[in-house]
Image (cartoon, rainbow, N blue to C red; front, side, top):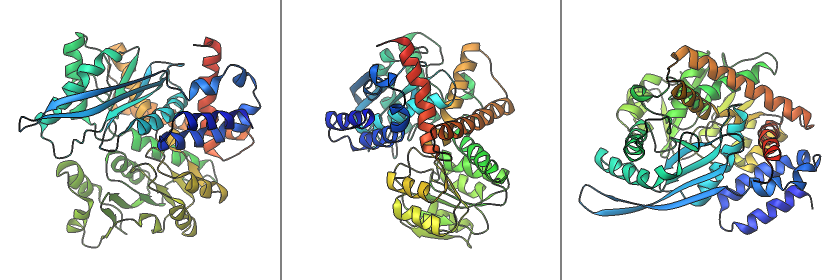
Length: 444
């Protein structure tokens, strides 16, 4: 048995019932197998055994009082996975589905994603099973203050810099930052995704969606000189990533025809009216089904089926495992030529394999959606320098980073003997930087 497969087997055995973490470990270690086997120094130094084990896992209770005066208790997590190339960096997710397995799955991915940005940030992730939906501002504030009362002692500008994620936007970051500042007596850039009035960065809101589109556009350009201009694009989700991916596709001349949420999806053959979508999701916080009230020629379909719509490019931006093998085969039959993951691992392993076998250009999430964390790192830089860059300056830096990520994963795939397999390319490129740093720092 090869070194990578032996470590994978041990990892699954040592972490029973953590199915999401198993999925991430399987995807990454399987694609690294050939590269690692060609470099025995990694086995000698126990790099993989150290890589799959978080440096630190923090689990804690979060008691808070709701508007009825009742004490509520949630679970909190922070997994500080790897700091070989810099302080831990990764979002906080507030969602009922959050568990240790999901946080480890996301944190393990984050190691490689952060490495790919070329910036000095390590991998971490955190969150809680708290659901902010339906909660008042006061309840959300009470929860955020309680969470930070425990978390503040484990983070710091040179230790661990959390950000937002699903369920954590500017409101939540603001509440947590205010409590951190009170407890630590430090006004420092320890959280990213902050408001522009107190150290936030322009383009941070748009960054994940914009970055996704920049990378996919570059991928198309380097395969036949094509681009997103004139392409029909499917986008799933209707949150931050989906909205700004749609905006950037439209700016580049493409036509997005779908958006979705947990209830179903809307199809607009004339192209999504972004003003309407933003009104529904960002202002009214409503359901995407309301879109047809504004655009009567659009069609709303309840439940699944978005990937059956004919398209040139698909951008899954909703959640993990939203696109399975049957969906992948439907996209392939309908002439899809490229897929870019806006969410974290939205395509199952079987779907990914189907895309690769059929020579579909496939950009995995750790590369394609790295724009968010890259811009968070740019926010850290601005905070450290006590300065602020313009929107155009940050957007240009973001585009340069995403183009560089594409070039690096393409080169790594080719070097590994898997040209155009960007899953292998992303994992090898991300792994090599972290592993070499670990080798140089010794067994720590």
